[in-house]
Length: 114
Length: 114
Image 1: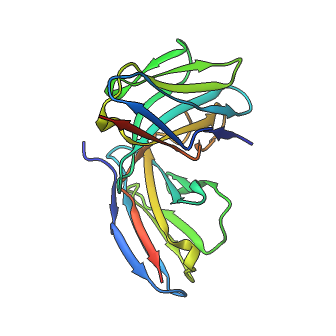
Image 2: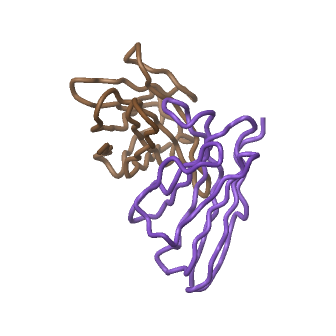
């Protein structure tokens, strides 16, 4: 099976712009989670979607949003970008929403905000 | 709230020697514990997980981890380190109920010298 894919792999934006990141889960996986990884804060949970419904949300401002489509593909959007949004954004998919299903990660999208 | 502590930012070991990467956790109820590895500019790769049963869990690439409930620890081990094991290792915990998310530790950089 193909793994989790994320597009684009790299992005450069300026402050105030918005950005949309895409994630295609492993075939058959219905749960998609998003994480932000920075050197200072480490890996932080953004949100989780299962069957097009947001099940969990991390402690991020409303500028961060996401959605999941009927084919389980997911997008996340960040509006009004700030310098501190520069990070590696990781998407992970699993079979179900509940633990202990293993989450499999994509390669990430590296976002640089100037 | 659930949390993970990886007390060492970096672990240095010579090739051929055994390695241990430490992890302690805090969670309400039964924990589900995971180890992931991250190579430069890559996403996270799943190594192993503990759900229930045998306290010694065997995973990919010769890694294993020992679950210790009384010490709330889940240390990652390998009998003989390889230079190619050099990477960033993350421990993660999820509570065993509801739609709990993964909480990651800060990560431990493992450096294996030839």
